[in-house]
Length: 127
Image 1 (cartoon, one colour):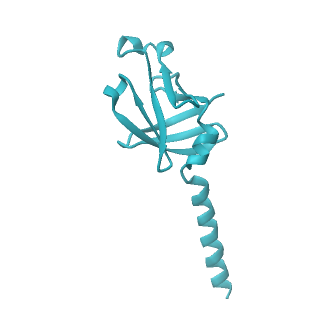
Image 2 (spheres, rainbow, N blue to C red):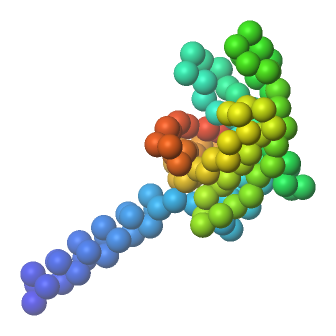
Image 3 (tube, rainbow, N blue to C red):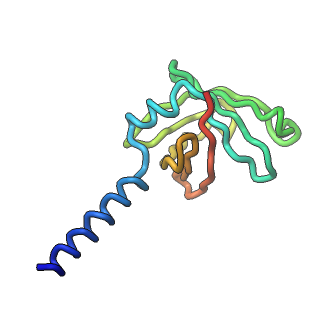
């Protein structure tokens, strides 16, 4: 009986841990991301802001990071949520390709993102 209770306790503990590490749902994304600025961590330091507006518009501006030398520094597109993933499509960035992201909260104002092509990174949730 003791072994059975220990097994149940371990199963419940592992289940609760999985729930904490689970990806964000549509409701979580709407509550934590939409209407806010998300700051993507840039590989060479700094942050890249993306604004997910309640109107369904997403815009970004990389002028502060100096990306204007490499690509158009700012762009606007649209966002939507599909299957608990945050999706977006910019006008010119990424040649207008649609992309979706699995988001996992890693703290009160941090998320890990994994793009549908396997790329991943971290972001800070702003106001």
